[in-house]
Length: 128
Image 1 (cartoon, rainbow, N blue to C red):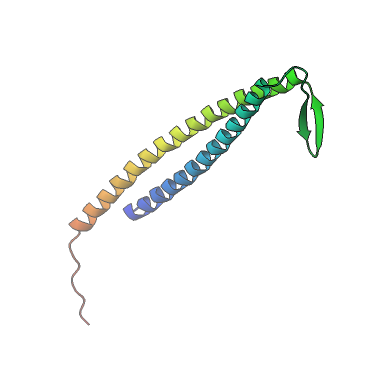
Image 2 (image 1 turned 30 degrees about the vertical axis):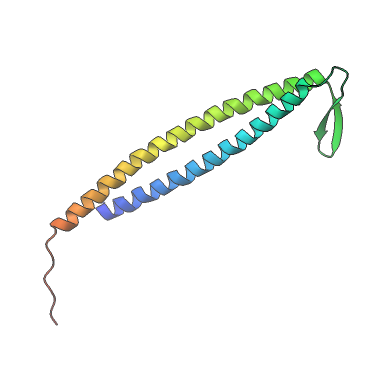
């Protein structure tokens, strides 16, 4: 495989890694928004008196829900979201590591290309 083809392939792989990283970062941002929202709900639950009624929105209908069950659901959701954030952060670190390796590979190929082009003697002019 020529150096030019290797450069093209490595460049394409680097761009794919950048796209993957962008998607994973967007997923993390969505998870952060969900975490924030659920933490607000948990704070609201802390201010409720035992006689307050809690409703859950299911489709277009509000359904009465037990307060303890609702608090438990929010706590479970918070645990899940936090674990997903940790998983996504792991993916981000992995992709960033792959990007660094690919960046080094690209630099190596570019250096090899520059050396190859500077060591090639210029071709003789063609006269017609």
